[in-house]
Length: 305
Image (cartoon, rainbow, N blue to C red):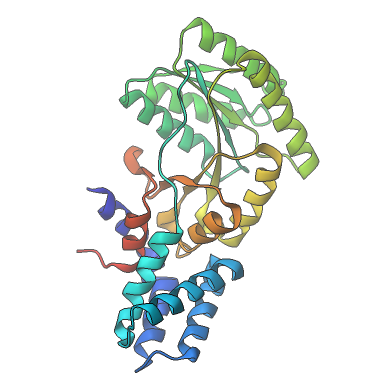
């Protein structure tokens, strides 16, 4: 299955039950392009997890394109919207991993699919010929360490872990030392998502970051925030907190196939100015897909063939 087909499959609920279906119904109810049509479309976008600032931007761009291209046929509104969405969303799977070792810090609240993402990412990097070592720095939950071990075994990569309740920063330190000794290409660190307030979150992530900076000052570093697409606008609010705490370099959006809230990608890109690097469009190992703006827009607006 090609990239566009995977996105079409993954965005089926958004297309058939979410904002795309509503946009289609509204456009079909008008015989000509009017201000009322624009207002209704903006309302659908706001209610569909795109959020007010982004919805306003999309509709402004839509008006300008329709006027500039002298579009009169209301049936062309949908295709024009698709072009605008393709131009607004951005990302791609490029990971800055120029040094040996490079570090990927994976952050996010519990239940968003962090461990699964790390497993799939490990497999992806291994397929590219890179050696990977994992660090289980989510020491608050024994289950998190066990889950990561399952994925480490599956991907055939080493896992550095300590007992439940250990200091996460010390696990990061041990993982870096092991990565250096084993000449690993990439060190991936799992972090706790159970930190109750912003100050705890910042303190924990700052402590981990200081260890990485001290031990690997020249290393390439990615900070990937994993978000659950099914939480819609809440995902955007979470991302704002994490961005403040950790300086995110990219987003991994999971469970896109399980929600009609695919419009949240637009809000994440626009309000946070952070690229979406990967999206989860299914349960299979290869369903962690590099983000592609054209494939995303096609997945939202084009039916499965």
